[in-house]
Amino acid sequence: MAGLRKVRAIIKWFIPDSFLYHYLAPLFKTVTRTSEKPRKQLRFQINLTDHCNLNCAGCTAFSPLAEEKYMDVDCFEHDCARLSELAGGKIELIDLLGGEPLLHPEIVRIVEIARKYFDGDINIVTNGVLLTKMSEVFWHVCHKNDIGIIISGYPIKLKMEEIQKHAESNKVKLVIRGGTNDIKIWNKVPYDLSGKQNPVKNFRICYGANMCINLENGRLATCPIPFVIKQFNKFCNHSAL
Ligand SMILES: C[S@@+](CC[C@H](N)C(=O)[O-])C[C@H]1O[C@@H](n2cnc3c(N)ncnc32)[C@H](O)[C@@H]1O
Ligand code: SF4
Image (tube, rainbow, N blue to C red; front, side):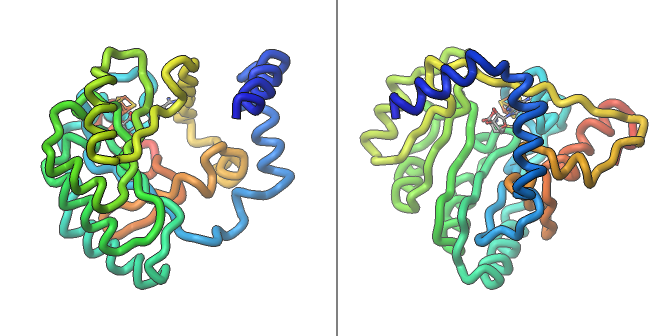
């Protein structure tokens, strides 16, 4: 693992991030056509809230612009039941995110529903701020249902020792994405509001194509943008998408 990190660091030293993300990764995706190959197993992510308790510049979910809004849990159960039926109960990955997922008052019921219908990896992706305030029932349910917690490692002060203690004593998998010492890569995603872009070509070269499948109220989208753009449109009084 340490060897792999060294190789990555050397590649990064020679090849700037901008070149890697803007030229090499799209070229790789175009040549291998990974964006278009049917997935072997279902995976999806779902926003439990539109809003958030942080205000990150460049948030791809437009959460700093969003009004307070919580996912409908009955609708989630209905969708999980149907998708589970179609996928034979197997899932590659479910990421529960947002906005900030830990703001949802029914988070315990949500993780129980996800596990009731799917066998596979299920994670909560969080900024971590509320982890020290979560109930014992929350930690217990995460352990019982094998739910991983991923903290998106931001330059904010978290009570990491306390969080790690909760996770360890409850035997819950805790990952700090990017690690504590790494540099956080924050993408700047420009939007061309002229309507002149080629969506098919852009989808094919997108780093998240065929990965970030999103679920919302009975609908699946190949990308989070169709569901979150309403935040941008409302805030900016625009009609993109
Ligand atoms: C939109 S956040 C929602 C979940 C939670 N609030 C969090 O920040 O972890 C989901 C993931 O998207 C990532 N993300 C959001 N905007 C980003 C950007 N501009 N560049 C890179 N990653 C971004 C976050 O770091 C996080 O891992
Ligand atoms: S913590 Fe997550 S959802 Fe909240 S503003 Fe930052 S990236 Fe967006």
